[in-house]
Image (cartoon, rainbow, N blue to C red; front, side, top):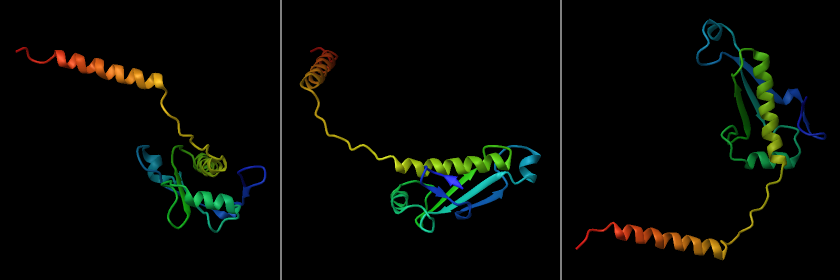
Length: 136
C-alpha cells in the first residue's frame, strides 16, 4: 500500500514494478545485476479519487504519457530495494503535488516611484551614450 494522504492509498496491485539493468558506469555489478527499477502506474485504471485522476491527466509532465500512464525509472542506488523505494517516493510526491491547490496570480501594476526610477535610469543611460559620440 502506498499512502498518499490519510484518506487516499494505492494498492500494490495497481503499481507495476520491473527490475532491469542500470545504465552508466559501475563496473561488473552493472553488467550482472538488475538494480534499476521501472515503475508504471495507470492513472485511469487506478482506484484514485476522480479529482486526483483529472488533475494528474491535466498535468504537463514528461513522465505521464498520453494514455495516462506514469512511468518512473530509478537507478540512483546500487541496490534494487533502494531504487524501488525511490521510485515509490517519486510517485507519491507527484500525486501529492497536485493535491495542493495553486494560488491564483493577482495582476499588479508597477508603482509610480518604480516607473519614475526606470525612466530616470533610461534618460541617464541615454545621456551617457550620447557623450560617447564622435566630436565634430
